[in-house]
Image 1 (cartoon, rainbow, N blue to C red):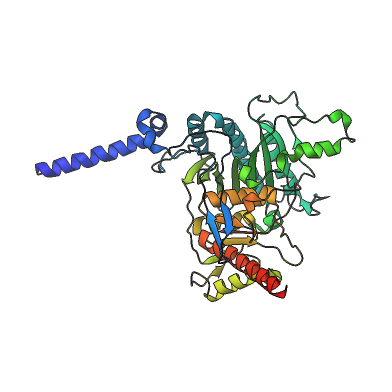
Image 2: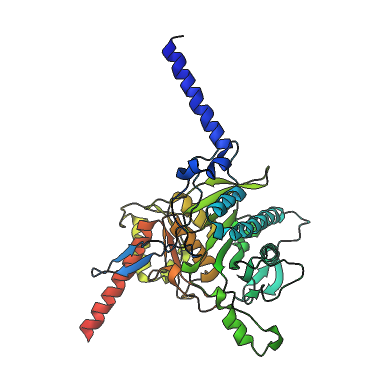
Length: 448
């Protein structure tokens, strides 16, 4: 062989040998001074992991969406490649996060518990169809929303509540299946070692789409994490006389989405997916059942800005607000802002529909109608966490007139209409509502 061929071949092997070594020893390199470029720059200043996005109406009646500087920039690990043979586990991801953000280390154990709960729930859902599982059907009780509780609702709620409780990092939790927030820090048990450091508030829907589980439709778990006000102390000796004080104290949970520290969901479908954001992008993990570990499969998800898919329950379209009706009609006919004809894809499970929207682009919506003016999705543990995840992937989330992340809940189980998804398509909905509002104001001024 010629000397040039030998040199070329030698360089090729040297290059690929280096790539293989860097993949296997990524953990070591990530914390060394030579690997600074593998991670995003930024400085931590407080415990609010959020990017504020504001919507303002401009003179033309359209809405301008601006992205001011983030209140806090968190250093999230950036891996140059997803190694096919080794992979990056969720545990490893959170460990790297805590190394770069020491004040965030308590989230590692918290999300470790969430991941374990998701694995247990995934296994429970998969086995629910077996004759001896005794997990299908109704529990015989009704939750605070007046909905019949399925057995799996109760089981999954208990799994997630126990997993979070025993981390010792949680002050308060609120769930779709609980009548009111549960104070954990105020009821210290000898079984639990409570950390004296930062504590959090967890809000969650333990099994979204549970009404479809009997038919094998995808289901999921949604969770949001807020900071806990450690000065909130309840005197349980005065119950029930001071129940009003308890409710005020539990206002720890009544925080807008802008205050979220982190949000995540688990999807139980063809695979078990774990998608989370800590305020610096959205990351997706897939459960490798052979290893029993969530492996990074979708690093830094970025959804398309324009799409041709919408996901809504069209059987109620005649009851929607007029601006939304006109926009959806335009999408269906191909006369909308993008000029594309849209297809309809609706699962009926929020986690399933949102997951597809994140990966392929599109619009997911559960708008209000004449019967349910505020829609049916709960703001605190469905709307806000999913909006946080969507925005961190480059999308938008709105009620039509207001950004979902800015709404301050008045009650724990408050409902809110939602349209979320690809930036340009959701912006079209926002503009339609703004134009309708501006038109109404002009008509009112003329009449006066």
